Length: 484
Image (cartoon, rainbow, N blue to C red; front, side, top):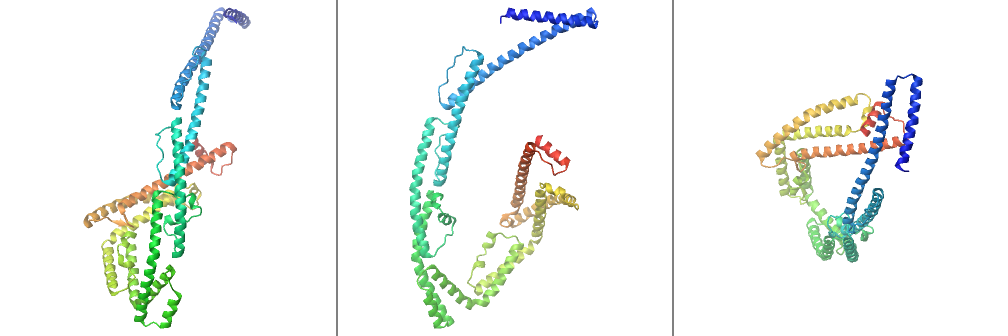
């Protein structure tokens, strides 16, 4: 329609409306002055309505122009990322059509970008799996998000190289595995190390880590097994000579000797083990009483180690403890060591009591901290929650005081003794810090798990609805926590 036609319709509409309004006002009995005022209100209302319509259309135009600018910038960025020419569009067309064309192009390039990223992920995953098996570095194409075609070709070439390496190393692994297992059978050997156990796992050819380090280790194992076969023969001969010497000294019956040698022949590991057992049995007959004395001292020594919180490495430093050659000299060494440990314990008894007290209190604190995240404790009867709160207040007050005092004593002790105060093989000042850090991590993990569980419950209840089994206030608080 022409502008003039619209004007005519508006004038006609306005005239009809004003006539109706005048008629209504006359019927109501409104004064002329009030009619004038009401007429002005009608005029202002119409002006305001038209102005709002103009502003809304202007806003639409600005929004479309802003979209055109945004899409243009996004299109330029996508073109650069994908390495494709910037599409040329007719800039003389209407804003609405231009905006629609730009948005369509952006969607097309986004789809292409998504496909490239998807292909890159597949290539990266394949490369990573191969690199993990072979322990080789991945191909470096930089920290790219959207690869170009050249970068994708480089990745594909590297994957092809890795697959060939995998086949080559797998063949080598299969050959060595067969050879090693054959020697294990002849040596009556069972896998001991982690590498050996992994090698004999079912279908190990498909998942064994084929790094150069592991393959070299298997080559070394092959050589060691070959050497072991030669050494077994020498060992068996030496053990038999030792047994014969002990048989003679202990005046063992010749028939017993002949029965043993008839049963255990050759140099298999089982034969060697039997000879070692026989040698030990013969030595035990000679040193039987002395062994009892030494074993009693060892039990006493273990007791003092426990009281002094000795770690495994500290205990292992007393090498005679593992000596099975029970002699008078070994007995004297053990007696001396017991006296040393006894003196050490008595001298530092107050320190060990503080450690014991602190460990007990910390364990209780740890239980309370972890129990704090258990919502079921609120339903306990008999004042358990009140007791828990009281225990917590006592621990929160006393444990820091005890730790502060203990750190002071430890610093003083370390300065005087010029060594670290160890508990279970770790410097105790550091162990306390680590215990608190571990507790903090545990609490955070429990908190995250509970939060995740609550979210899942809330989502289910919002979708399907449910009857809460918790008190109304707690249920309302849970909802507030979830939403706010």
